Image 1: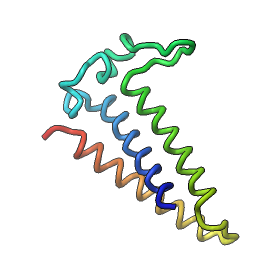
Image 2 (image 1 turned 180 degrees about the vertical axis):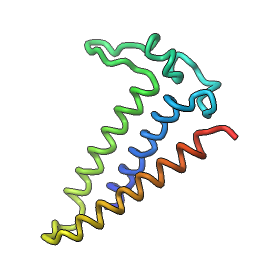
Image 3 (image 1 turned 120 degrees about the vertical axis):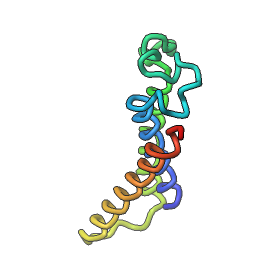
Image 4 (image 1 turned 90 degrees about the vertical axis):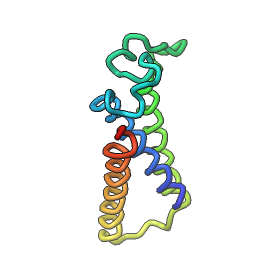
Length: 118
């Protein structure tokens, strides 16, 4: 179950990076890095296309893909290694609420503090 929460947390971090790039790139810790990879205003024009796909490799797309992979891993680890399924509705409600609190807490810490320059 700990791995599931770790992957859930990493997915929230990836989402915070994506939103920081789109909404606060010029105030972010990514500003002085390669703008053709990190700046979404530039990167979509200059992104490298992975051979045999139409997938563009820039920071936003990379973290979007990572977020999806982490969410899938969180579900798999919760399903395979988590506690046995309970037939009580309140267990799922509590789990839903705690996962929402975890996602929003991690997202806000990264989006509003860690990824923004002071």
